[in-house]
Image (cartoon, rainbow, N blue to C red; front, side):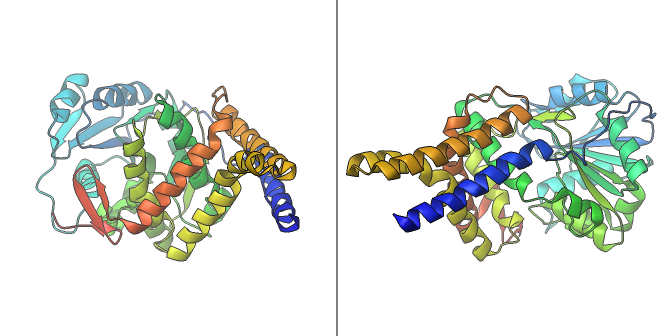
Length: 370
């Protein structure tokens, strides 16, 4: 038991540090609310493939959030009437059908390129079709980008969680990703990162890179675009602002595994050693503790039961902080180990399987054959 106790103390110390870090997360990197900027110099670009369930709400929210901004929706070869629904959602929205995709381009990168082509606005705001922008966020992003002299600025918003698996798994995976991003390092220029759900970029900078052609085949086109901007000498930033937008990412366990399975290994720069380390760390710190309780009861080991229960309680306390930070009740906190288990499966799946999303395949981090 000595080794188990030492390991438990180390894991407990880690959880205490993580619990203490949550209230401080993003404190120096928030997005101030500022609605004082005219938006005629912004084009909002919305790539959309089979988004019939989302596109009307996305367009309506974008128009309400950015009166005066130009909005261009690109229907990326949808089969569910996405384009027609977008046209009906607002009369002052331009809807383009994506031309045939050139070889080597991912569907999203090509749709973003088509949406931004011909823009005269100073700023391009790329918005995913499942995003609901909040009032004033577009103006606030532009003001902040100009104040901080950022060529590219993205933001972490909040998730809309409906089903059981969304509530359990998405915050566990989402905060695993957020926790890996040092916002201060991004601000200093030591690291490049972006959240493509809502991404503002200076049009002149985007054009100088060749537009989305610079990231044409990348799975993580948002992160790669941030890296391209950084390599060109531009400045990149990420803000944490749960008020800024809401997004419903995936609506089922299978969609969660497929969606995150597409991105996680790429976020680890396709390094298997990092993936293995992540799986081991998450399993030992998050999945294993509650398992120790029934095991200890079965073998009659009171200490093992106590260790498992104590670590599980710390884990639940961390998740409660996360939930409250995001504005939710926190009742799901004791089920964090289940969300962590989904994270482990998603990492393994991402590492071992080719990514397929909306009928399109990615091989080696790049868009596969059409």
